[in-house]
Image (cartoon, rainbow over the protein chains, first blue to last red):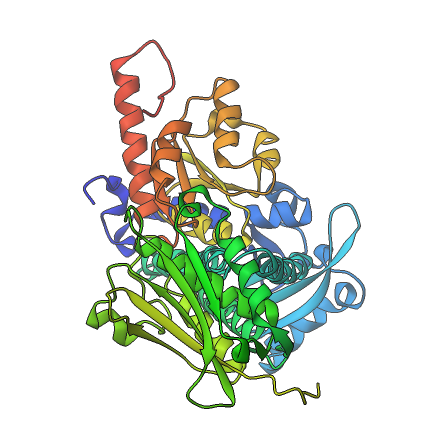
Length: 388
Length: 136
């Protein structure tokens, strides 16, 4: 990194006092949570830019003022006692833990905050650093998560698993980006001797962990969406269901001219299935086949529905005459994130497998004798005595 | 201190970028969308814009177009979590100086900021008429 400004090429702990102060101020301006430093009497010594935005006071107004100005209700009057108690007894009510309290803005409105306090001892004196997160914003983040879920549901009604996977990839990228940034920033902060910086570091790592958990939640929610016990299985006639699925794959022009034929054996037409989810599987398989045969002049796709070896099941095969699967990819094809597509996430087939298995069936990929690939999956046959 | 404006609709991305970029010695302001940025008191005071492609309301390209219409010629970097091949084309066509895909690895975003700023500085040196640097 030859472009790095000179001041940042020396370790932070070797900076002189002025540079040190400047660096502290830059942190104070960029620390994402509102950050307030007080002395042991509760007098504010530093007030970050995020705190200015959150409370509606300027740092200039607040420095030198008692911190209980920012509190509401009981905490406002009792705050002096909290610090006194701690200094006298060493009994930690809040230091090192987080707590939800009610704060007051300059305009008098009150709002819930998550308050975390770190302490630093300088000689005989204590400095307290408070990190404050606006919980009203967290509430809106939860709302966003719900919206996203319903978006996913919406996507899945309209189109194929591939679209869902792409939306999922984008949603996952947000927390992953945050994790990467927080960790990178933490590495930068590691060498700083400032006790306040240590708290910033702690906050950044906690936030990175939160975002990593959030990424996991997104995956879990998606999985539970496609695989939860709520698969709406009912007796269906496969012919019209598959015809609709084929029509849905023809929505984009570059795919429309690949012919897709369908053969349904009469004795295998009735199955127990969630029609939308089975359509998702079929659409995904057809689109994969189309993607594998881009530019191939004689490309064609055939759907065949026939009785399975196990007579309790029917088998649906989606076969193409494309280049076929290489042995390496065949091994891992249903594993998440296995993909041969430059833009693919490798989730489509993994989700297809989840759906098929939730129906009590199996899915596998085989090479077809005349070249190309067949994906075959099974569904339970409708024997006419289904009870929901 | 060089000033950077970051526009992203995800709170986590905004906050983490502020900490990362701020820790490298820049003054960072964060905005959650076009409206928010355009209401900022001192737009000409920023040295670089970092803008997410997909924003609520007008997207990142539209936002940059509005900034350019207002005569703001500072370099801008496009960031995006959508894995599309066309991202580079979108970035170039919309007049961004660089683009970074999410998730961002290492400090690629800071490297890009340093790069576009030094390119802009060179432009100013070549045209000492007092024009602010335009990213190309």
